[in-house]
Amino acid sequence: MSEEANINLEVNLDDAQDFVTVPAEVYELQVVSAEPATAKSSGRAMIKLRLSLMEQPEEGVASDIYTNLMLPTPDQEKPKYVATVNRIKQFIQAFNLDLSGKIDSEAICEAAEGATGYALLDVEEGYDGTPRNTVKRYVVAP
Image (cartoon, rainbow, N blue to C red):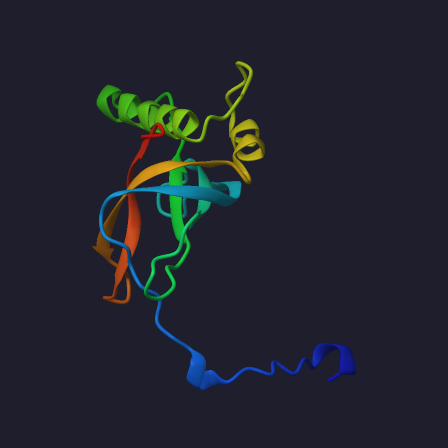
């Protein structure tokens, strides 16, 4: 192993703590990252979002929120297509993204990174059985 690969962490693992969830309500968030991707299960195009609370709770540290913004496809049933387009519209309006008429996954990702906006968060059971925050819907600033 080279010297460059060995990094002394200088941390006390006893200081490690579990992340906390915040109650279901509207929060200001920042887009930490947004990248085009393909859903493994359906093969549909989507945008992978990583969102961070602008203010951490008084007690503990809340984890970033990882969520997907599915993109519409012409073969979707009309109700699902409309719901997908509405979710994208909510996101664009909530984070006040200026897309200048160009709406595609790359333009959305580029405009979104670093943007702040609001979302109604919910609490759901995560894959490992612990509670986690999820985005219920995006909302324009309260």
